[in-house]
Length: 304
Image 1 (tube, rainbow, N blue to C red):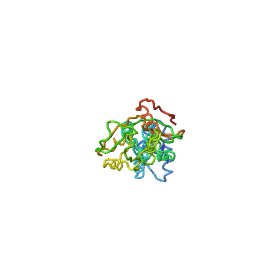
Image 2: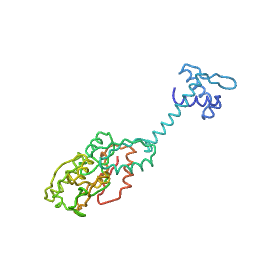
Image 3: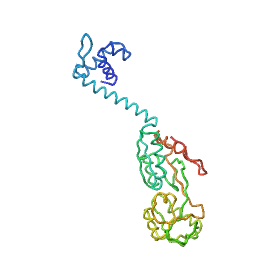
Image 4: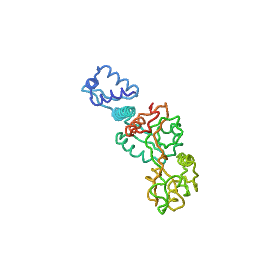
């Protein structure tokens, strides 16, 4: 029994005559009669009772007709779904996002979902280094990560460059509207040390580049706790702008750093020279269209 035979049988069951069913199927009567006979032989049951005025379904025929309708419908739905997956209309987008980059992902996913309402998603939040590992393992296809990061094996679409801010307790009366790295030396510092972010080493390198010593009081891997410690007056910190947007409600004094050199970027990455699903390619193109051309540029843009 195959799908062609089921379609033939549905036409016979509904038309009640071989001649009418053959006309509906645009085929001759003898081959259709033979297909019905073959189907009955394959199943070992009589499916129709033949009368001079037409055909009547047996109990087995009625049962087969019900199942045939469901099977043909399911086959058509499957065919359509496979076609839509190949066109990127359906499918699953598997993407990772860095702990401090969810503000970038959310609006783009909403826009993508509006455009492709039948898409499903696999979203993993982790640190940038771990997201790179997940892409290499093919657990996810894309990831929004933060730089600096070793990305020789990845294609990159740069998304955003953001400044860092000096943050102290709301009761701090020492610094004005801006602060220099030299002035920061007077503060005991708590630096974010979350693995994979690269923020900790970026700040240390910036002090070293200026031949300055940082008054390092503590490292803290938990951003909310770090900000709570700063709010209490335990120490000061330096964080990227997104941290302040994501973690509001702390009593903090936020001061712009006088030198504009300290900043960090984020970007969308995927594995070079590897297959990408149509869904992933469509998402890359959406972000590329929404990302303004800047001096940062875009590297390794080939999509495969």
